[in-house]
Amino acid sequence: MARKGLLLILSSPSGAGKSTLTRMLMGWDPTMRFSVSATTRAPRPGETDGREYFFRSRAEFEAMVDQGQMLEHAEVFGNFYGTPRGPVEENMRAGCDTVFDIDWQGGQQIRNSALGRDVVSVFVLPPSIAELDRRLRSRGQDSDEVIAGRMAKSRDEISHWAEYDYVLVNEDLDTTFARLKTILESERLRRDRQPGLADFVRGLNREFEAR
Image (cartoon, rainbow, N blue to C red; front, side, top):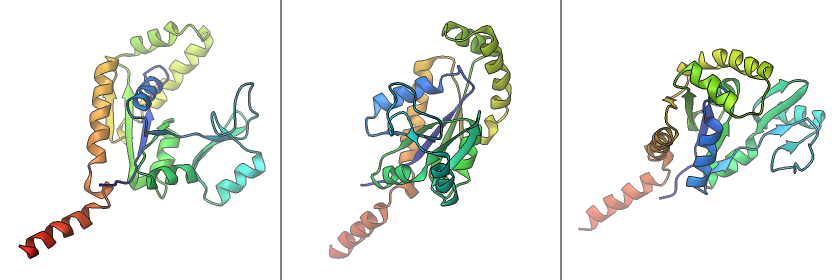
């Protein structure tokens, strides 16, 4: 039976594993769609409109907000970023789930939007702060100053864990991924996400009446 697509929000402090888990989900189920954000910043070399971001002027972005076309948005370092509503609704109608790799503020806005009833939110915690620090340093991409900033922000991110439907402690990536798949598979089977179920049951009743 056809089902309505859901909105899967993954949040975590930097280094806890949400981006890796997102990539694993997309590889596990090719029907899943990753939410592409809109932004007012200029494209960087190699970036394509509609792939990395939907690149919009500030006036276009503000018009989208005013017209209710954004599920969530925020201003970061002088540029707007946000989630266009149209592509998400198209995915839902097609029965495809949309994955959001966003922070707690964006997740909160989407949960409070008109599509909030179709949201499943998962927060990913590190097994310890020492391990979180180790993972950030093991990337070899950031300076000590940047890592210190990420660690400071992590405390605020973690304080919002109780706002989520599910919380996973990412001690072992494979175990965490298996649990994430279980959450997704269970949520897909919820009665209110199977719009054809009522017609199916009516068909069963007609079979009873025809006996």
